[in-house]
Image 1 (cartoon, rainbow, N blue to C red):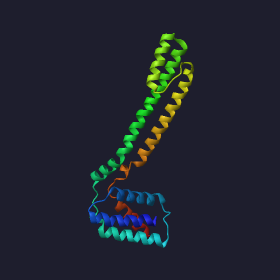
Image 2: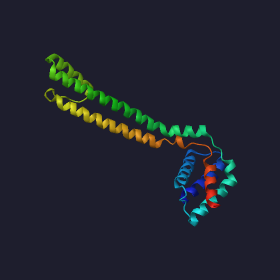
Image 3: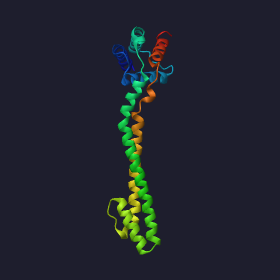
Image 4: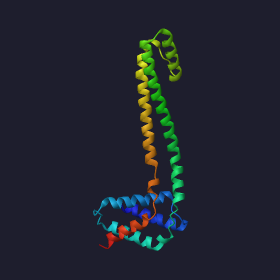
Length: 193
């Protein structure tokens, strides 16, 4: 925790020199606040922690007023970072939907194959072959229902993975004003108990 506090202190000085917080600095401050709030009375009593906390309070009192929180810029930075993840998510969603549609169609063709005449069977098999993009043998039509089911499951797994990556990359919820002030308040309370 001391390393994170020291990094946030460095971020405060860097942001004060630059005139505004960067997204990375904001995220680190949020993570520090979250860590402090999650400890609820179990704050370390080590000298290293006390020194880091004291240093943070000193840095905040010296340059905290110079910190500029530009929510629009920070949200724009977060959106730019998220764009490739959203593109991959969109592609994975499309692939999953297409694979699920192919599986449903394969089940319909199997029903046609079991219950219809030769012309309907050939027409349905031809359409399934076109949509599938791989060779289908007419005497093994049941296997393609299973194969398309596997393809649909794989596509759904890729979609879930892309969705999780997108959620993990989304830092926009960490963009909030007053985080440094709250950290200062918590650390001040700890130091002067």
